[in-house]
Amino acid sequence: MNENVYDTIIIGSGPAGLTAAIYNVRADLKTIVLAGEQPGGQLTITTAVDNWPGFPLGIGGTKLMMDMQKQVTNLGVEIKNATVSRISNFKLQSANFKIELIDKSELLAKAVILATGAKAKWIGLPNEKEMIGKGVSGCATCDGFFFRDKVVTVVGGGDTACEDAVFLAKFASKVYVVHRREEFRAAAIEQKKVFGNPKIEVLWNSEIKELNPPDPAVAGSPSLDKEGGDKLRAVKIFNNKTNEEKIMPTDGLFVAIGHTPATEFVADLVNRDPEGFVVIGENKDHPMMTSMAGIFAAGDATTINRDFRQAIAAAGDGCKAGLDAESWLGSQSL
Image (cartoon, rainbow, N blue to C red; front, side, top):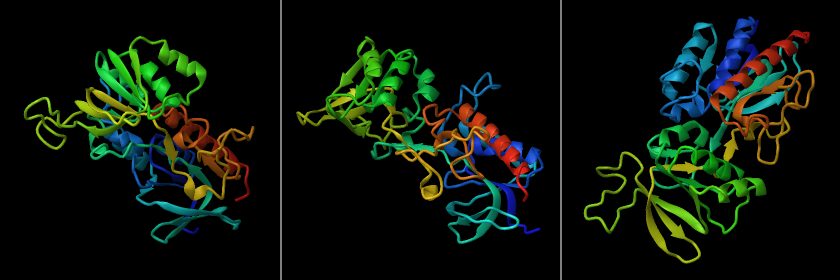
């Protein structure tokens, strides 16, 4: 048997990919996980996970993913630090797909599970990503609990931004919504919830230009890279209509300007929606299968899970994709 031929190749090593691997290897399928550009996925940049069942005191995101990886490898799954450049559909006696890696090597698969996730779009401010977990977040439902009785700021004007603002108002003492335009793009019902909440204030025609800016009114005010800059304290707001700037104290900044799924490498292979999320759920016999027979998808890169963006939901998707792939492989004459 060709050692480069696998029953399933799982692309992505977050909760969805690793859970799929657990179910596939337990079904005695030869399985490999290709870890991708961010091994462990988005949880590795989450300092504390408070909503994963079984941890009454919570668990660090990196710790959780390291434990999941260890569980997967202990079961006999190989995890390869590799990034896929292309998948080719072809029919051999032993495989359906050729997986091309960026290092020019190739693997063959009978079935593929896409679990590549989606990355939050960031504003692009200096040191923004270094402040993730120190007051900056891309997931209100993940981190909102930690900002009880605090002042927080949401950036964005779509459904997600409005939903995040309403959710955060359950915990925070004050929620500012910073939007660069003078009207929301969100659905009317979501806007109504924002305008009807006394804790929420909208700053129209406004943009965030700096994190922890020096405050000229305070002598010796520290900047981001000096003493006191280890967590978010304030943001600089720019009004693009009046050209006015102001420094606004805040304990948390939630960026809600969208997510980008890591699916470009399969753009010519499977159906995606206009934003690039992989379409699943159209095959009544194999609900986790994409438009290409033999390719399954799970987690935040899919149209089904895109609005949840929760690790536990992604893991559940991974379970279903693993079982679905096993069922489909059993029906094939490979």
